[in-house]
Length: 277
Image (spheres, rainbow, N blue to C red):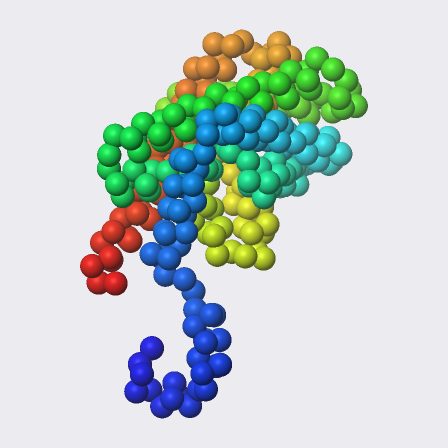
């Protein structure tokens, strides 16, 4: 803001503070907020990360339940997915607002710290974080999917909806799943970039971004694993189909999309603007 601008000089000190408060934060400020959060995650004990990741995997199961309920109670019509996809956001709300560890959500941000310090301990810590969170996320989703499949948790008439949703996680080739998963990872990373200063709009941001992922059927390694594993426990699909048709291409695509968004886009714009700032 130009100090010689007469409109600026006409403002009193309180008004100037209010104007600064209403300014959108710069990319560097957003970057630093996310980087500090990533640094904190890297310093957490692995046991604490494991329990948090297990809780996140279990919480993501409610996305499948919400989707199945909306799908089942909505009339069969071309617009049915528009309604049922809102259920996809439920698990993300529980996990993100509950500060639980979710692969692609809290695990991609440490890439910022890796790019900043570029040393082996940070790289090693990031890989350990990824491994622990991914394993316990999947364990949580497997427990949830098994419970839905083996016990009468929901009304039996919901089973058809659960099976239909599980089927959407299969049926695509490796390359197609990989590319679609890139978009899912990209959108999750974009959501992370928006959340630190979304304030009262955090819930809206989470719902809108994850709703797009669900409606477009972009595969997400944790949210999708609940439905995909339900299909395995229900007997519709085999474990090898899960591993090679869903898990592997989705994991790789989510990581490429997330790292590309965090590193190649967000980190780069801050790194190149730093000398000017």
